[in-house]
Length: 102
Image (cartoon, rainbow, N blue to C red; front, side, top):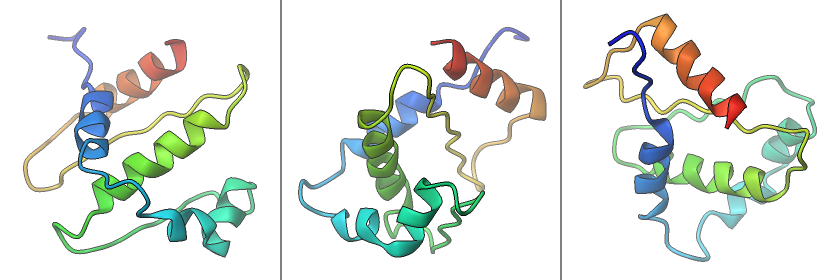
């Protein structure tokens, strides 16, 4: 329906459930990530083959960002699986906007 919004937080939660405590810290310390977090880069591009852990790593990054924000900051995101999901631009924008207002 036109009111439906993809639930990307559910996908994030599922991916984060696969996280093993203590892993991924290297990424959060990487100079490119630190520079991106400071706003020196507009895009953080993390390519990789299917099944290598990108979704889990991104869930760790989202968790890290959400823990360190104030009330004036929002962390919004989209999880896409290019082989199985197709969303319209309108659905993606709705998903981002719904995260802003939550």
